[in-house]
Length: 442
Ligand code: S3P
Image (tube, rainbow, N blue to C red):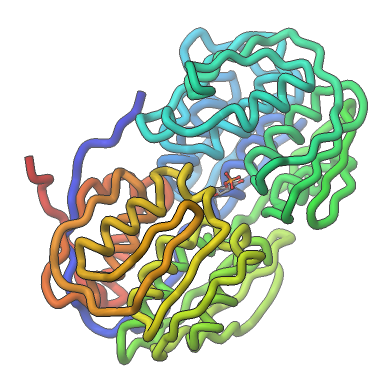
């Protein structure tokens, strides 16, 4: 298991955020590019790949399964596909690190193999619910054992014959949808996945780009087994979720004017933009274009006073990873922000409703936690210490909060920022934020 060593940051008010920056590649797309590249016939060249711990773990797993992956330069991968049936068994467990996406999508792929595998993860991933994939995969004929409570490790029995299903997801989850679609590549007949609310469609788009016949529309995807994936090049846009910290930081720090380049603008990811704008943010999309089949844009964000709002429930899935950043914007806004319909935040890399509530309270913000959301009163941050619980997005969010704090903020346990945004500190410093490494208190 791969728990990162303890590391803290001390963050404090910096300068207005200015200049132009580009955040790293999209995590969701990077995972999928390695996976489909590995299962394709031919060689897939991935550019803009996220050099994060999560996506590197996925690449390592495929190397363990016999796939050759070259790294000609940082943020580039050349994946030598072995075809749908070319993976080899690994006698060692396959370590997904901190990555829920890695583990859940891999479970779909491995359920269709002619060999057994074991998927493990770090302490946080080992607490995350897996029944949401093991139950529908079992309905397709897969056999996966878990620890009590449906928790990892996942012991996946191979040599099962899978068959298609028509499955309505109980919760909106792109990971569950994708696990089923990947298992469906190996299944007899057709699989249909229906969602209660549309989620990110990267698996569907990429399967189509790799030549697999698939019908999809927001909220539904349908494909049949028995085809071939053909290698294609993948150009990964910058990750909207990583850009989100800077959208909020530049919105709340007076005097800021920051340009973010080539940000992925898939509409299933950009709910935060709509919410920040409704709060009064000044964010302008310039030079909207396409990159690798995905909409991208440069975003110009200028400081603007924010006011609290009721976050529309229908936007929750489109901003599911951006709530930690939104909580900071809400705490800086005038008035009250209400969040509902976001119980899924409790089963992310940490319980994000609880970790954000306790961190904001530690900095003097009035926040009430509800079973599926929070009520945040705008206020002023004091100094203090907050626990990120090893959650990358919590750590980065409090680094943003500290830019407006009246004293220093110690953020505990930040090493996992490297899972999604390895260069966060130098990028934040270059933009004007104040942040430094500190040894973890005993
Ligand atoms: C992801 C889907 C979302 C998201 C995660 C990445 C994906 O998870 O929170 O960071 O790449 O499919 P859920 O499917 O659990 O909502």
